[in-house]
Image 1 (cartoon, rainbow, N blue to C red):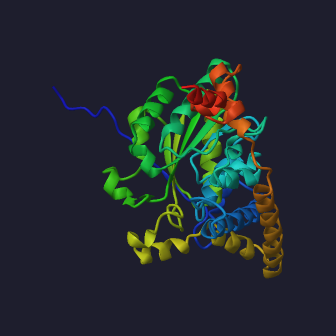
Image 2 (image 1 turned 30 degrees about the horizontal axis):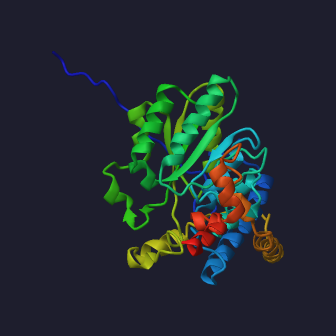
Image 3 (image 1 turned 45 degrees about the horizontal axis):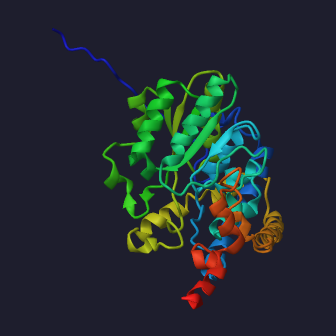
Length: 371
C-alpha cells in the first residue's frame, strides 16, 4: 500500500513592532491607532511603576512574597485590550496585573492579595474575572468550564486564561485543552512563555521546538507571537476572540516574552540565569520599545515622560494608601462565608473563639473543685 501523509501543519510567528520601535505598516493596519498606542503606553508605565513599588513593599516588610510583572506588560495589556470589559472573563495566573486592572479590578486588590488579606480575592460585582491563581495550571480548567457555560447559554462571551510555559507541562493543561477543543468552547489559552518555570529553562521541561505546537494535538488554531510587541499581541488576541465569539471554538496563543525580574521576591534568578541573556532581553523591554515608537512619530517627549512619571508616583501612593489603610477584618469573617446557616458547634466557636471544651464552657472548671 502507498504511504500517504495524513497530517501537516505550520505555525506562524507574528511580529509587527520590533525592539527598535520600527513597525511593519502593512501588518499594523487595522490594529491600534497611534492615539490608542499612546494611551496604552501611559497605562503601561503606570503599571510598571506600581509593580516596582510593590517589590519595595516586600523588601521593606510591608507585604509578603510578590511576583513582579516587569517585562511582560505588553502581553497582558495587548490581550486585555482585545477583550470586552464587563463581558469576557479573565482567568489569570499572577503576572497579568495590567489586564486585571484594565478590566476593572481596583489596583489595591492585588496588593491586598500579596499582603495576605483575603479581601483582595473578593472580586467586585460586575468585574468579570477570577482571583489570582497560585497553583500552576488549575485555572485553565476553570476557564474551560466558564466558557462551556457561555456556549450552553448561547452567550457571545469568551473566557481567556493566562499561564506560563511551565504550566503546559501540567496534566490540567492537557485536560483543559482536550475538553475545550472537543466541545468547541469559546476559550483563549494565552501562554506567556517567559522562558523559565522558576529555575527550570523551557528547553529542560519540553522537547518541542515551540509551546504553540502543543495545540496542534488538539486540532486547535495556534500561533506564536512576539509577546513584547503590543500591536502583535492585540492582533492575534482580537482574531482569536472574534473567532470564538462567532462559534469557531478555542485558540492557543504563545506569547514569547521574558520576566526581567526574579520569579518572585523569594527567588534569586542570578543563581541560574546568564546575565547576558537578561541583558539581551532588557533591550526588548516593551516599555522602551513603545517609547521609541512614539518618539519616532513625534508623539512623545522627555517633558511628557517626566510629567507621566510624576503622575504615576501620585497614583502609586494612592494605591498603597488604599491597601494599607483598609480597616482590619473582624474574626467573624472566619465563620460567615461558608454556611448559609452556621452549625451550632461553629456558633460556639465564633462566640468564644475557642475550640476546646473548657474554653467554650469555662463553667466546667468548677467541677474539678467538687471532686
